[in-house]
Length: 166
Image (cartoon, rainbow, N blue to C red):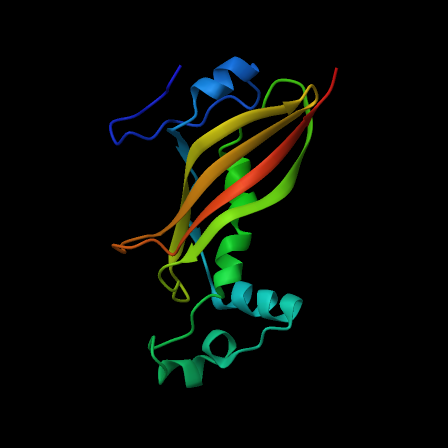
């Protein structure tokens, strides 16, 4: 059961699968999210929430004279969109009660996201590991693309701990 389309990426898988079917998906692209436009209001809200008021993000007039000819999103804002994107391409072992962020193996901020750009997430399920009778650890590579750009904004390997019930 390795769903795919002409570009090698699947349509989103069912929300819950038997563990054996989920394991069979390891190494495949499990889906792409919808595009999301990153506007200045979102960047400003993130800056306020994190107390990161660096001018390259929140001062459009000054940023126009900076290295990117305008404001850019925080790299951590881009990274923080992964849960939102993941909700569109959902997968889990059958019986999952909750999913907990377990951490990242690798994160790279490759290209800045200019204000007004649209981004999406291409997700590849890399590994599925049954840890205990009631826990499954998945590793998913998230490649955050910028619409029309040659290089992605971010590539991150997210570990998620799925807690299953009886």
